[in-house]
Length: 175
Image (cartoon, one colour):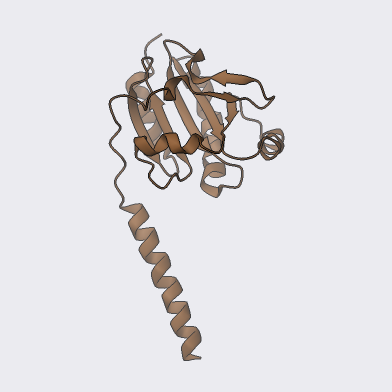
């Protein structure tokens, strides 16, 4: 019985330490400019057609890295779906970059339609986020880019609606 209690205590303590560390971690300070080529990154869309992040000139781009298997990612998608129409008309283009196979992403999007463009990340796509403060290359991650590819805001982990709305309000007024 003592062995079971000890193992249970170790598991609980580890879980609490991880949760505590995640809760109090600092968001990365965004670099003034995205890594070279990041704003012009080209990835296939859900139909396999190459699409560039640069195809929305003069717009702010909210780029959300996610995956169908990622619980926090799936939890924030309904909020992004709901917010997209109001920010799209305010000069902000939402773009999803899904980190999974095209088959998995298409199956997920078929069951849970997303109104904004979604691209399929390649094996090395997340490595580009390392220079944006995502050393562990974790998901979800959201990056707000300006029209000249300047990094305005970076969020590691699940989005908070109030925080996201505040950041979008700072930039989403230009038409």
